[in-house]
Length: 266
Image 1 (tube, rainbow, N blue to C red):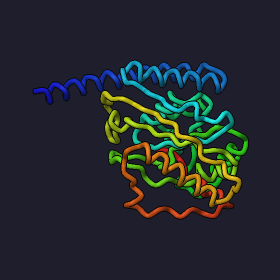
Image 2 (cartoon, rainbow, N blue to C red; image 1 turned 120 degrees about the horizontal axis):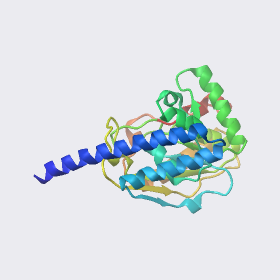
Image 3 (tube, helix red, strand yellow; image 1 turned 135 degrees about the vertical axis):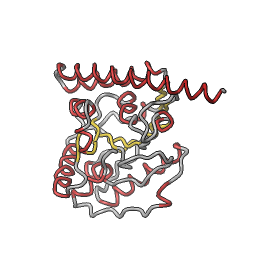
């Protein structure tokens, strides 16, 4: 009986949570249309993201914001749910631009909102376009733009940390920027892959100590940034290392801009 009650409660709560999200997304979209200035739109997005979790009654605990360098940096986080981008939007200062796969631009509302807050859409399937996008990300890193990546590139219902794509770390190494690893916990429990109704839960975001920058700006430095960031996320994530079941990708030469195209979000 208790199990049936819990299931009914979760369904009703999920319908409420989804409805609240859609209403807030429509409101945020309208505000994005009329609000000038990227900084203002990012502040609106941050407030809207925080309001979502307040309306849901889902605690969002953020630890380690003081570890963000005062200078420009690149942040990388584990990827477990469609909620992850909203979580980082709520948790981080409004100066970060998300690097996202191009397909997200076609998603109703989400694609427009991401565009209006300055997200960077990158190609993964077309090699020529991917190379152009990689050069653009490298230029932005060199110019001091703060970028946020989900270097696994995708997510699934299965717990665990997938292999990292190399682009975030190539951009950081080539631009001489530190990388801040971020651990997100609880997102997969609230909204796992292939599920549309959220479930009650608790969210935690933990920022780890920055990695780098290294004096060298080559492929070896990018690999060192990737390995160190991955170790720190794994140490705090309490999920298995899925690279044990997959062959680790070999990084391309440092001079090749195509390397950076591999670090896009799911």
